[in-house]
Image 1 (cartoon, rainbow, N blue to C red):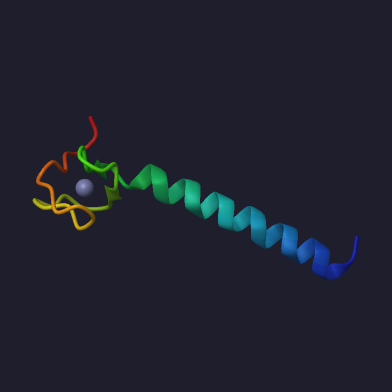
Image 2 (image 1 turned 135 degrees about the vertical axis):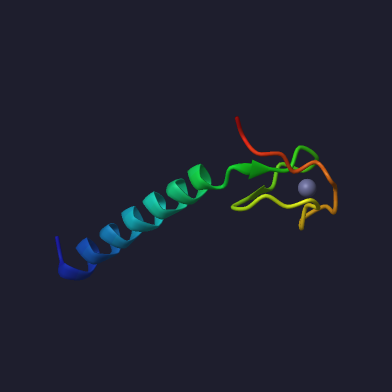
Amino acid sequence: MGFFEDLGRKVGEFTHEAKRAADEEAEYPCESCGERFYADREVCQECGGGDVVPLE
Ligand SMILES: [Zn+2]
C-alpha cells in the first residue's frame, strides 16, 4: 500500500469517527424535522419549529 493510499484511508476513518462522535453529542433533536443541535434552543434553526427537546 502506498503512502497516499494509507493516508487517505486514515483520513476517511477519522472523518467517520468524528461524524459519529458529533451525532452522539448532539443531544437536542428537533421533533419536527429531525435536525440535531449541541445546545438547547427554543427555536429550531432548520425549520423554525419550537419542538427542540433534549434526549433523555
Ligand atoms: Zn426543526
